Image 1 (cartoon, one colour):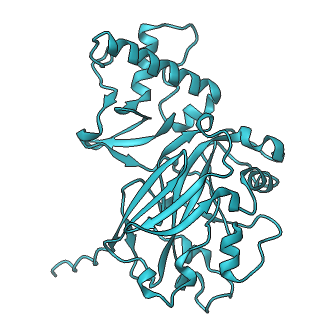
Image 2 (tube, helix red, strand yellow):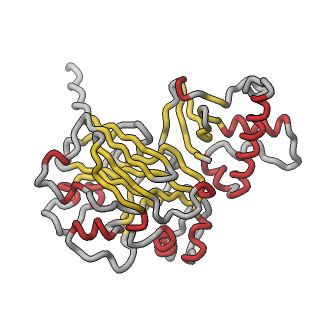
Image 3 (spheres, rainbow, N blue to C red):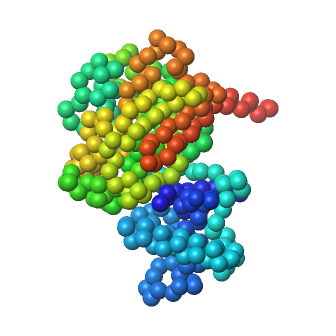
Length: 330
């Protein structure tokens, strides 16, 4: 199951992507229980991602049951519409737009130097323990939403990463149980400004806030793929292209610390909550260490495509920051 948020005619929906379109799970769930009453059932349990995650595996099972119920009725000639008249099935060609699947207020953790190939191109040994920094939700954009290049930064580059969405709140999570706390996986494009990250030159102390914290610099999506579709995140093939040319290629087996180690480490002193996002880090090929080749610096008009095996392809166009509005006449 692929879960997330989408927009149609300025109305926001939470739901699932299905083979022939999109399913509004909130409306569909209400309709299902209206026609299939269950004592004590909460028909509003799918009103958003947070309530969906609160149901854990039961939510996934119920969502699959609802989808099977709809499929049976459609084959019988039924026009998909709730008893209230509200629609809950939409086709992509109607103009559906993806929104980021990450909740406002979620904590965002980013693993740094977390691949053998990326450490090698930096000329340093892999870290001895997991090393992370934080991002904020102001940085989030969704699938096919543009990265806007900020005039304050001169050396923007992009990295492809595996995104891990926490499904169950926990603290001091043991490594061997860490995957039980995962709701699913997604694709991440991490855009940063190397000149802002290292204002005094490469190898100096990093300014993570300015280098990685500007508005609209973390693309996530298109949706969250439930963990039952990807039971083991190790060894997934990763490919990042800019304008059709491969920039990064490898697998998640290159990560120094896997998903289990990262979750166990962070949760020793931080409560991980349902909906939090863990970005697992970049593979080698990040152009931030190749600025002798100016053509590798991102520019308006570029198109970024990152693909993670068994998960999805995330697309991010790049455009320039809009000039400031002229002052109002006196």
